[in-house]
Image (cartoon, rainbow, N blue to C red; front, side, top):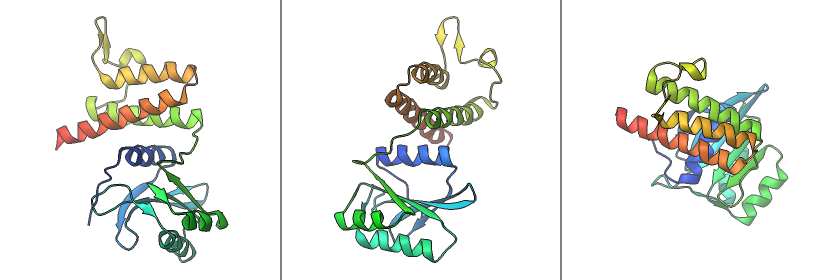
Length: 194
């Protein structure tokens, strides 16, 4: 069974984590009700578990969800897990606090990202979108045809230039908005291609 994430904040958070940390290979986990992603980082295997309901909306983290995740870590080669859900019960949060290798993000508890991580994610997403749209990644600003004397003709280039200014100003919230705009463009491009 394949399921698509449908809650905006969860889609954006998962995309940001995938881009920064290289999470790949999404698999639907029917037992937990999640979409699981894996990555290798600094000789550690990490699991990102995005909780979803049957409609693809962000799910709630209950005690049994966290217990199952802890068991999955103990029974496998996974070193750490990050659970992403709409909210978590008090007992689930308490259990996660007892386990150093399990962390969580919710719509109410958002991780503070480093400026450099967000800039990296924007750069990676921009390169990916340029390749999809134009077939190549420009080596310099002059190679990009996204801006002319009349102004911007490409949203990717506009967002990229905006994010450069936002990074110089150290406006993290604006950078997150820039990243989210790129994710939206990516989803629109994929829709147009299908």
